[in-house]
Amino acid sequence: MPFNRYLVRFDARRSLHQFTDVLVIGAGIAGLRAALEIPQDLSVLVATKDRITESNSAYAQGGIAGVRSPEDRFENHVEDTMVAGDGLCDREVVELVVREGPTQIDLLVNWDTHFDLENGTLALTREGGHSHRRIVHALGDATGHEVMRAVIARAQTAPNVVLWDDTFTIDLLTDNGACVGAVVWRPGVGKILVWAKQVILASGGCGMVYRETTNPPVATGDGMAAAYRAGAELRDMEFMQFHPTVLYVAGSARYLISEAVRGEGAYLRDVHGERFMLKDDPRAELAPRDVVSRAIFRTMERTQHPNVYLDLSHLDPALVSTRFPGISRVCRQFGLDITKDKVPVRPGAHYMVGGVTVDSHGRTTLPNLWAAGEVTSSGLHGANRLASNSLLEGLVFGAVCGRGAAEASRRMPDSFRAPLLRSATVTDDPGGHLDVADVTNALRGLMVRKMGIVREKGRLDEATQDVKFWCRYVLAREFDTRAGWELQNLLTVARLMLDAAARREESRGTHFRSDFPKRDDDHWARHLSSPRREALTE
Image (cartoon, rainbow, N blue to C red; front, side):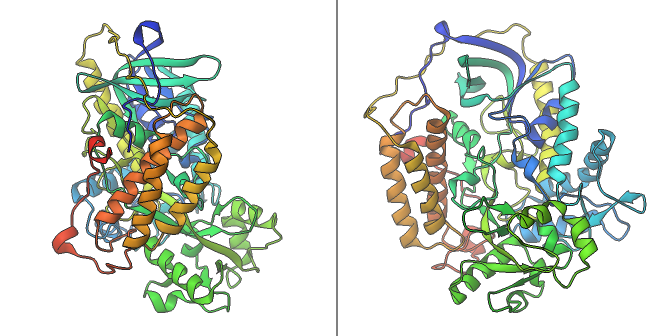
């Protein structure tokens, strides 16, 4: 499988240059929180591939988990996270994030985030896997949108922060074994070499590697793939979390139905009206996402029906309409009244638990490169993310990375030097037309069929051979469009996911092998690092 170090050719002697103290790649909650943590005497450039409002963070519905009620304790939140993580969480990291949570939520309130209130205090709800009501939310089911509105407004007024939207990060630049910036592409300008003392990667996830996903189109794993090409370690790529309840209406875009719907008491029923979760887990609809997703998968196979149904008809209609206005609005477009009609749902790829390895300070294995948010494997989520811990992780690790990158930047010389880097020439370009959209669609369909909720060796091997074949003629090309670079990144991420899923011969968290259905702590209570590029080269 060919792996060029850089996706495009460039020569520092003939390129446009930009200099900054800290480069932040990604403008979701983690990226902007990092940027806002950096003191104003240091320059910050934030580059995001689409509009600044377009990120996984903005689409988050449920909320942010944080211990706030007198009945709840930090130890409870820690334990819930550890249980969901199925034996792979790093307790030190879990403690760090959970204990910092209330402070970060208070900061958002100070930044004019309008969380929902109840009797004058922050309203709290409960989601699957949580033992207490501890989820703060905004606008009913539009928490991400409201949080990002407030954080974006704050970043836009920060005097040391420059925001570049519509900027595609093609690759991370490295020199003498350290990250020194990135090569980016901007419409009307072309390639720019951005040189930075420190780089913070907060580029989000890779849900678009699947046809069925809750993620927006920007989630194509660009940061993970770029970090991999640059030599940073990735790990736990087998752990893709599937959200159990994605609106399934033929011909429509997939729309997330928040975990909070079940937290407020909604039932899951099969096509015959049976409430099947009661037989699968004592927690029923409030079991962790991997348990619910597999139960739905088995039910769909048993009934030979393409979906199951969410039933809210037994709940107070006024509460449902007030609590879930966004979901209600979307369902009305299809003639569904969520207060009385059963809502068709099925699982969809939702959150990549694995990613770029970071320590408790947000440092990657590549010097001068930090990372936060969904692009990382921090040890918080283990083998399965607890609901509403993702925005929390972005806030905490964004702040940690911002502080660390600022301190490291101050220790470096004030003068900038642009290394005379040249990318290696892309070789073995077969030329001719390549239908990028067709290969992308084929990859996304393949991942649903053979790298989905339930996996086994035969299907994984078949998928690996197909992906290797596509990689041989796609990764050898040099593209000049975003769609081409995204396809190359998706193929790279898919190859790493398949490799990890085939190697982990057990079932744990979001990774379920029908040929190895039991958890095996004797052999697999450990992280799996992705092989280096050379090991995957054929």
